[in-house]
Image 1 (cartoon, helix red, strand yellow):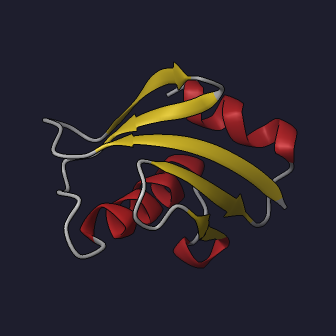
Image 2: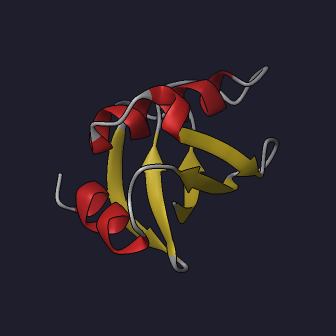
Image 3: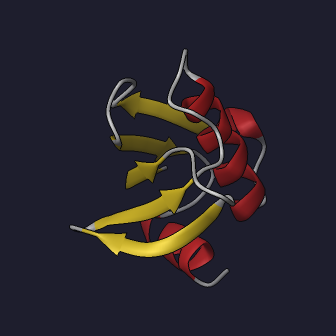
Length: 87
């Protein structure tokens, strides 16, 4: 199990990892920050990028914030960041 800090930018032109922001991985998402759409898009995007099932990505904190804490089941802490930042 790994813990990942992410900073979300909703309403972007594409879904992409754009680098780091204050120690968190910065991710742009096309989904708007309305009624959990960006949270659902984030889980889908992370699962796709890390080649994991969606249920392995759990939003632990930050449901209504741009700064979120994600639990990733099935990967170690050392494996998570390289998988995201290399793409």
